[in-house]
Amino acid sequence: MIGRFRFKGDDVAKDIKEKYGFSGKLATLFKNNKGAVVHKWHHYIPIYDKYLSRYRGKSFKMLEIGVSKGGSIQLWRAYFGEDATIYGIDIDPNCAQFDGQYGQVRIGSQDDPDFLRAVIEEMGGVDVIIDDGSHRMDHIRTSLDTLFPLLAEDGIYLVEDLHTAYWPEFGGGPLENMNFFRTIGGMIDDMHKWYHDEQPQVPSTAGYVKAIHIHDSIAVLEKAKIVPPVHSRRGK
Image 1 (tube, rainbow, N blue to C red):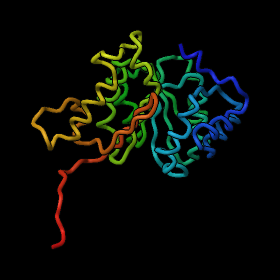
Image 2 (image 1 turned 90 degrees about the vertical axis):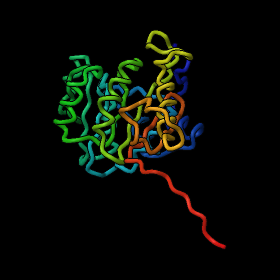
Image 3 (image 1 turned 60 degrees about the vertical axis):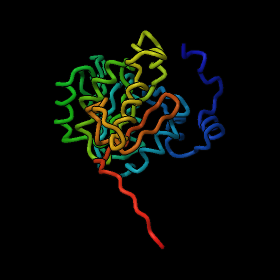
Image 4 (image 1 turned 30 degrees about the vertical axis):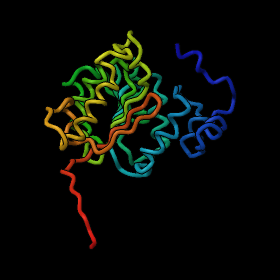
């Protein structure tokens, strides 16, 4: 299905600049990649930079769900620098060959809470999580429910390729309850808990979602401990 969206040109960086107004380092790294295969939608590149550029050159901890051909971890290492702790997980045993090259790789399922918790324990915590795994609705939710509580405050949780939320073979569909955008709707209700008496719809994130950003096929969750809102009137 996604074949019809394949880029037909040659200059990836030019396409990203002309369509999305972005010409930063990540676009250059993506364009010039000659190593392991990196497969990204072009409009993702400026989105990544928007939310993750603050970590460049810093000592922080990132987990990417989905290793595939190994190119993504290579790209992140070049983008973030040597001080970053980068882990990837994948269910495919062949991905073990990438362990230690540009980050650490652990083999297991994103649908296995015990495995996920063990990886985060080994990492010593996590500041950024990118879910580029199976793209199945049930797997996305299991990973979220397990990992979001372990994410550092002020951390970023990014779920990509959410066009699958509309595809039945991934457990999605426009009106399906498991469609991850329905889950996000529940998070929005939970963010506004001060104004209604309903119970949390997504308990694993309730009280800790500072902001939700929706882009084409990408959801970005900003984590922070939420405090009750207040308002004031000043002046005469």
